[in-house]
Amino acid sequence: MHDLGVDILLALLENPILVSASNSLKATPVRKFSVPDDSSPESSKWIYLFQREYATVDPAFVDFVGTDEATTCVGVAIRNLENGMISVAHMDSPKIVEMGLSQMLSLLVDDSLETEFDVHLIGGFEEVSPQHANGSVVSESDEDLDGYSFPLCSKIVHTLWSREEKFHIRTTCVLGHNTKRDCDENTYPIFNGFVVETASGTVIPACFDRSSRCPDEIVRRIRVSVSYEDTSLNGKLLETYETNTDCFKIAPCCWTLRQYQIASALQHYSDSEILSICSTSPTAEGPDFVDNLRRQWNYLIEHPHWTETFPKKQPRAFSRSADRSWKRCC
Image 1 (tube, rainbow, N blue to C red):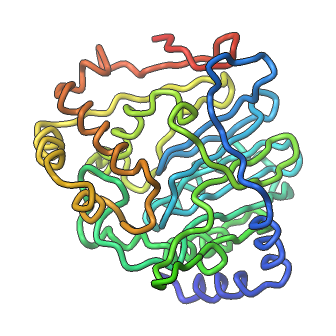
Image 2 (cartoon, one colour; image 1 turned 90 degrees about the vertical axis):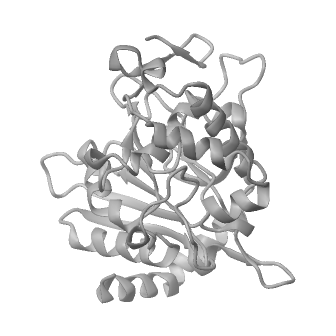
């Protein structure tokens, strides 16, 4: 962790304008996203991001872009003030920040260094030191388990400060500003998710139900988990969304007999044991955390060979249908 990053972070957390922005966000009702049984043409179009994913969206195609299920993770939103293009990421470790921000900015930055960007940071909280990588079937090594909220936030602001682009940090609803306590002094995040309204750039607290975390929910969750063992993805955010076509392409990922064996073993643990083993913040997870993991493991057990999911090692592609739902196209 850079000392300069800590100094910048502490100054931002105490900045009166940013404190006011955090208080305004906390006074904003949470928007709930769900796919209705009978989608109407007037329904919103959104892009949902899982942990370690990012997407850059064009307001012409997308109404909202966001994420949830964050505890010790931090959501980052960057908006190009000239053309309204927005990139959002769900960051879970300091080790992906530098490359991740470069990925996010790759479609936002033009040739001019005069372009200015709004930045919003939401998530993370004053948590108890975690034991394992967030929600992973396979935990990272001990040296990788520093992806807690404070060093993650510090790395983000230091990296932004170090880059040449012109950033305006508008929201820092992180750490103490995103922490609540119960009667036993256990801490919890106030917000687990947010969306950016693409037309205005407004940030809104948000939560998504299972139907709205699409497309290809389980395969994308598994891809996050197995990515920790894929050296080609070291330091990178996962890309699934194609900005120019408004389509999803989930690149092939392979799982091994080891993942199958781990999934089989973990299924026999109790819910409380799974929380302890698989969460960075066991007391702060959402009510469906364990169920989501069990569904991932069931998929791995039922599909032990990754080539069943990615025939001929091809991506899984999804496009929007007339009712704005996602349909598999290959």
